[in-house]
Length: 370
Image (cartoon, rainbow, N blue to C red; front, top):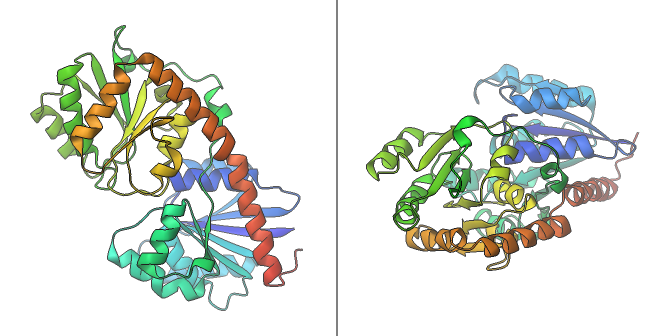
């Protein structure tokens, strides 16, 4: 049996956190023993992992200067003697690569979750690549981007796409709260994600103003919080969208929203492979997204959804309107989206690819399982 030590920045609800949860809880326990550590905070997924019987170690790091946290993590690695250290998110990738020096860990794997444009992140990936055996990238686009920007050798970059379980959409879900109950004939466009610069919700609001002029019985639901929330609310008021927008805040379970919405829109400025689109596709809903990162590896143009150029509010509005006006098209694209997830992006496939990687890299390092 091989012991896998997962290190992640935090355990709030997010794409990376969900991926780690699915991976840690679905590993073949006859071959692998998962342990999870988080650098800061506890978050909802912290408790969910513990409920599944997985050891979760809080490091409680208060900042880079927190020497005690570095020592706690070092002691945790030495005490558990993992065969593989697998880190998720930028801060965990950085801290894990340094703490693992001379730790006796056989294989060190870092995760590339997004095509990060910030130069500081790119430089850290470049400087720490020698301390990492392999990087798992959520898309081929992220693989090419990391090679091009951070100069990580291609042989160190492996694509392991995100995966979801379509059966989650078939399970009974709670009825939506009263504020989601809309009059008959009202269609809902949903946004699921952080209200920040990467996800670019302001672009969707500007597109929404165009849509509502043509299709006034349309509601845009924003599920998420973030630094741009106040600005987004002010922009919605300025555009006269107060009655056409619902601010749902952070949702611990997005399934009631996915069941109620008619399509999802994601106007990101940059991406890796967005879980929000994957989950919507798994629930049989079409997507309209900007053609950035791995979005084109999820959405087949005109077959499972639509792709539009980044920052193009007119194109975004036009594609949304096309779906709103054609119920048969929504059903056809939604059904094809679900089939694509089942065929190529199941959580089972994601777990199996990671398991094969752990075994392959351990064999290359001659790490003997216990």
